[in-house]
Length: 188
Image (cartoon, rainbow, N blue to C red; front, side):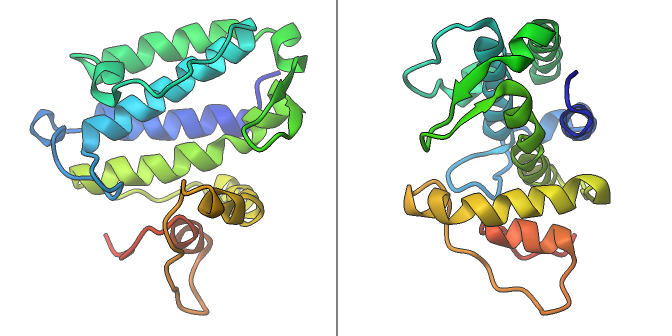
C-alpha cells in the first residue's frame, strides 16, 4: 500500500501548485538560483524518479533541466506524471529493494514513507516564491523533522543543503524543519 503520508504530501504540493498565479512562475524561490517553475520541475522530476524506481528502470544519470521537466503547463505535467507514478506503485514495486544515494538499501515503501520531507520543504519553497502561505499538516511535519534530523548532516556534507538557520527555543516543528534546510526568515 502506498504510504498515506506520501499521498497527503503530494496533495499538499498540488494544492499550492494549482493555485500558483500564472504571472508568478518566474518569481525567485528560496532555493538559490531557482524560481517557482524550477521548484515545480524539480518536484515533478522527482516523481518521475519514483516511477522509474517502481518500474525497475535505471535512474537518470544527470538532473534534467527543471523548466523542461515542468513543461509549458506545470499543473498538467504534474498531474500526468503523478498519475503515471501512482499507477506504477504496485504491491510488487512497493516491496522492491532500492539503493539510496548514501548506500542505504530500503524497500520502495520505506523510501516513500520518508519522501514527505522533500515534498514539504519544496511545497514551502513554491509557496514562498508565489506569495502563498503554507502551513504543514502536523501529522506530516513531525516525522519529516525526525527524518531531516537524521539525514541533514549527510546532505550538508554532500553539499546538498546550506547551513542550518538558527531558530528560537520555542519554535514550532515546521520552523525547525525549514531551518534544518536553511530556510528563513519564516514569517508569511
